[in-house]
Image 1 (spheres, rainbow, N blue to C red):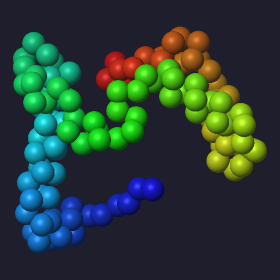
Image 2: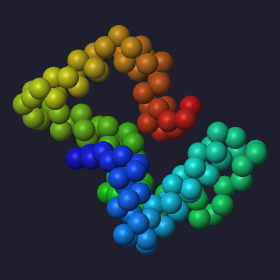
Image 3: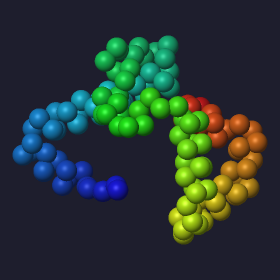
Image 4: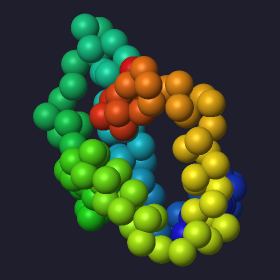
Length: 116
């Protein structure tokens, strides 16, 4: 489940939790440096501490093979009844743009390297 909070409200709350604020700023700065490196690696060197996202590495999907995740998700969809969400996903997957991208190999590229 995702939640949304305005910058102003988050900043006000984080003033009461300075350690959390410091950590969030550190993660954001690291992500910014990593993005700059991937956009122009010759101009921006990547420090060792920025190679792995300190928050993402805590998730269960971190380091998992993208193709295995997609395959497992497809199997999961096949085994469940067609709910409204599954129906929407099937419609998206059958869309002309998605089919054209799949034929060109862009789906796998986007999963493996979203910046290409």
